[in-house]
Image (cartoon, rainbow, N blue to C red; front, side, top):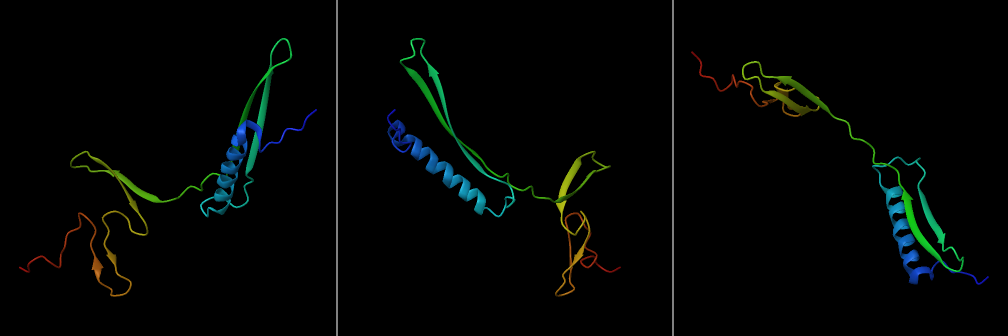
Length: 125
């Protein structure tokens, strides 16, 4: 049987598909947002379907990659309902809960969030 060279099969299209798959795998391996320990894979699959007289075969060639999934990103949200309007809300927060004031760590200045009364700006009676 004559040897079939994979880099020449389908006029070089298989080689091109493999090269793209290899690049995807290496990019996925270098992505800090993916777990390092997950195994990646490239599968080259040839499926042969022969004719009844056995002198001809259709060959479907595919190149598939198995990549590591991107790690999920976690956050926290305050959720609730405005009792006056009935409107629901969701708001992301870090170390500060919705509606709270925070203090600047460097200056000690109070910083205001949305919907917080500014007592410093109020006129004295």
